[in-house]
Every structure is written in structure tokens, then in C-alpha cells.
Image 1 (cartoon, rainbow, N blue to C red):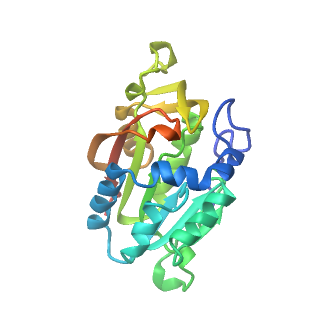
Image 2: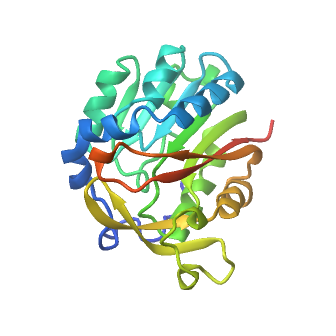
Amino acid sequence: MAYPEIPGAQHAAPPNVPTKEFFDTKGLDYETTYGHNAGLLKAIDKLTALLRPGCRVLDLGCGTGRPVAHTLAARGFRVHGVDFSETMVELSRSAAPSGVFEQAHYLEWAPFPPIAAEESQDPKQQKFGGIVVSSSFYELSREQMETLVSRWRDWLEPGGFVLLVMVGAEDVPATKPDMYDADGRFARGIPFRFMGDDCFLYLFTRAGWRALLEEKGGLSVREQWTEAFVPPSEADCDGEVNSFLIAESAK
């Protein structure tokens, strides 16, 4: 299946955005800081209660594999993870040995063309029962995010579920009115302290994340909620208000 090119997919990341090299050096430090997020663990519980038992789940931007891939694999789901950091992929393989993990940027990655499971023995050619995206996309433009999410229509099986865990632009204290797009759904260049570095985020608002899933992904949002996460002081990170969304594809 030929997909439309994602705008700017080959372009370098904007200035002051954490890069592949940044994450290659942060591996276990990242896991120590973010691998035990109580709100995320509760969200995984909600998701796994909805998923078809044993289905294939895509962990897009899998990081170290904890807690998402590790928890899903332990509960009998077939995990397929993708991350642009070699260090993160290796950690994911250790966290969930039964999973399949690839090093690739999610702007450039796509599964094999989805076909009916009974037509192929290759698990890569089966659709996903679920997709999890947790704390990724922050360096992408609005247009890149919209094009990427639109592809999920082809990747999800009927009645499949997406768990999206992000930060809403309005929930970052440094977000200013002049950072928003004209429709108020997206803000650019938001200052944020992340693991000892000063960087800039590109974020939808809470309503914008919902609209992204519904309008571009063709998904029906079943539940949306927020929960604060405070990293340990030694991590040198700003606190977050995580926005959780669980959405379903058409049956």
C-alpha cells in the first residue's frame, strides 16, 4: 500500500528538540524517570481490558519498553515496538523478549500492507488490535502529526483501540497566547526542561489531541482524562499534566 509522504519527513528536527543522539545517551536514566508513571500504568490497565486477548499491539515510540511493552507482553499481547534510538530499542528487547522491536523513525516507518490474517503466516502482515503512543511526537510539526495519525486507519483492525498519552499545550505553564495557531488547537516552541536540557515542545491542546484522533485518525474517543506526573527532583525535568485518550476504530 502506498502512503502519502509525510511533510518534512526527511528534515532535521527543529532546534532545541531532543534528538536520537540525546535518547541514545539517556536510556536507563529515562526509564528511571518515566518508567514508573502511575497514571500511565492505570491507563495500560484500561487499555488491556478493552483489547482482544492476544492481539498484536504497536508501541510507537517504545522507549525503553517499560512500562508499556513489558506490561503488554506479560499479559499475553504480541508487541511490535518502533523507536528511533538504538539504545531504546535494545532496552525494549530486554524488557519484553517476546516482542518484535525495530529501530526506525515513526515518520518513515510503516508495517507491511495489512491483509487478512488467514491469508498470511507472517505476523507483520496482520493488522494491529491496538496502538500505544506515549510521550512521543513532541518534535513533530502539526502537519506531520496529522499525516502520521491518518495512516492508523489502515493499521488498526476493526474495533481496535488507541491509547494516546500526551501533554496538552494549555497544561504547560510556559505556553503563551502567541504560540497558538489561529484555531487555538496547536502551539509551537513551548519552553520545557527535560532531563537536564532546555528544549521546546510542539503540542496540541487537550481538545486538539481529541480532534486529531477523531478527524485525522477516523477514531471515536471513548474516554479522555488528565493526571499530573511529577518526576523525581534528580531527573531535572519539569512536571507534567498527562492527557490520556482511549479511542476505538470503527467495527
